[in-house]
Length: 201
Image (cartoon, rainbow, N blue to C red; front, side, top):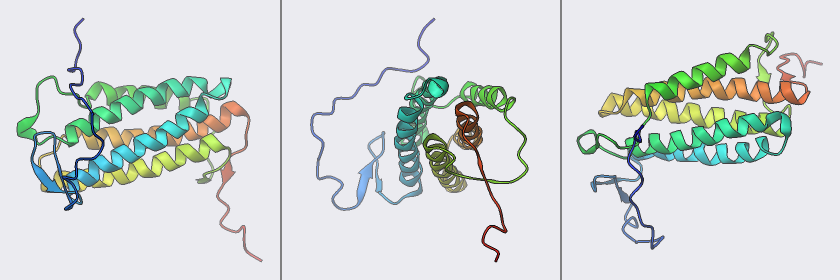
């Protein structure tokens, strides 16, 4: 079976070019746009999310109980790079085999949400991040993912952007919530439940 997407064709020989010193940057098609444009903000947030996922993946790989999640997070990191690729490209410049998010990626997240959620205890309150380190890191990822989603929603209102981007980020934020609870469950830690009367005297 052939590959779905083209392999990267890049060569990074110099880290700095000075071309962005005036506050603009280049899209994949070469167009110069302001660095604070919605398209740049969108894939910048996706890149930030990928970095935080790298931290969570490292933590997940340190414990046998959470090791299966490390492999999932690595796959998601590749998918987020695919998402960044398509967000960094104007629709007229997209190539047929350019990396992108697909409906299969969204469906896979749904499969994993259902599989990992079925063994979790029902929630009777909202949870606070921090039952253990991995739980807290996944909650950070979830909130960054929600911000990336909001930016992509704003982008789709102003420009032509792939609808799969919003669907994927929406599903991923749900998955990150489930994975944060799963990380607590499989390690035997206690969830921190929100108590609105905690500080009532």
